[in-house]
Picture (cartoon, rainbow, N blue to C red):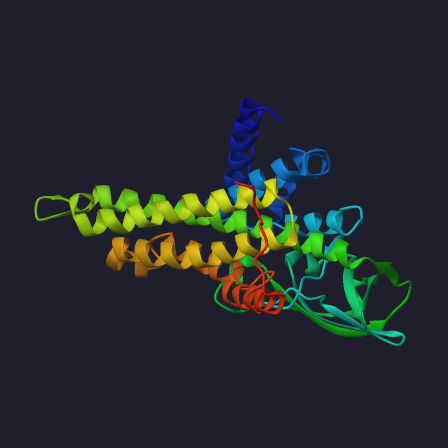
Length: 324
């Protein structure tokens, strides 16, 4: 895709998401808008551009959609469709969300809001050292809403024990690649939200006047905004690098950087926004809550860093992830 085409598509997608999320409280409106502009066709034809553009727009607009189900379904070799939800790993983890025990499947994971209405759930299960995929009716699982820091995000808790009918073998590499794709998508969404929070803080600093001049003129404020900008730019570069050198390790690093960057950006932007940033009258809190929830999808930054460190110590060598 050419740069001009990519820019036009990015503008079209962001406008469609913003219009859909602003016109109604119905969470399905954003999904419907993305379907109308050909989201699934884009995902099939240009997966990198589709994921980068759509998830970046979701981050910047703070909209809720279920496109992560389509990304994971495609990564696992299934046909994405609106009535198929994919069970995600438990919060802060990235292992298979199901376990196979004889002829029973034990489910324990999270899912998008699609799990509340989908006809079927696609579940990756651990069967000893091997993996299997099973597709089960959504009605046999216990699906409950998450009432945590971001109830508007639509996450669902899924638990249950169901018959293991038609379990299909899955290569470990396929699961790792699907998780890596999910991590790149979520990292891009966090980056979009971070960019939006920085824009909010910058606008406030330009508008807010103290001692006869905008607070943007004070060195301490400028430093916080500059540090946030550097962090966001570095995160976006790391996500691009994770696509250029596509591997589970580069995706894990990008997801960890997303979590660490988000902490930096939210702390600095909260300080710049001062009192108004603590209120629900200002939109900052919506981005803060959404990114806190996204931090735990496919592994938190702390958990990923610990895992990478353990593997480096065990291997006693540091691999070259990106050729500079």
